[in-house]
Image (tube, rainbow, N blue to C red):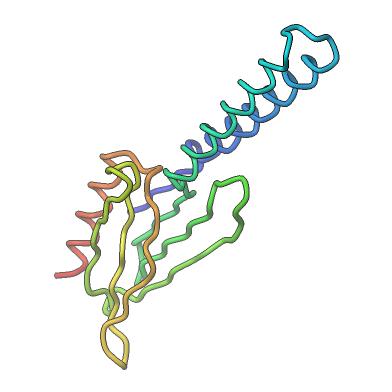
Length: 151
């Protein structure tokens, strides 16, 4: 099974860039042409930017690529946040996979998965990975696929 969130991730990244560009353009044009007195429009745009970025930080969107075809489970993820970077890849042999758990945080806005694998020293737990970008159907398909591998 393959799950690739390239399309929705591109929309999120492009949308966040466009929002920032539009807000900056409005602020600059207001400073030049003085549309609204007392810099009210500037303060409103700054407030909108802060609220928008707070929402993106709470959701912590990641580009997700999941592939369970073959002998390994491959999970690639990259943060879509403006101030974060890094490409991460997990390759887990199917025989070493133990279980996966879903955690919800920040009033259920952010969905995270925690993966457990078998190592020579015991069971290892990977750090939580945000899967907020996945639809409910994609998440259900991924979980059922991993449950079938676990058995």
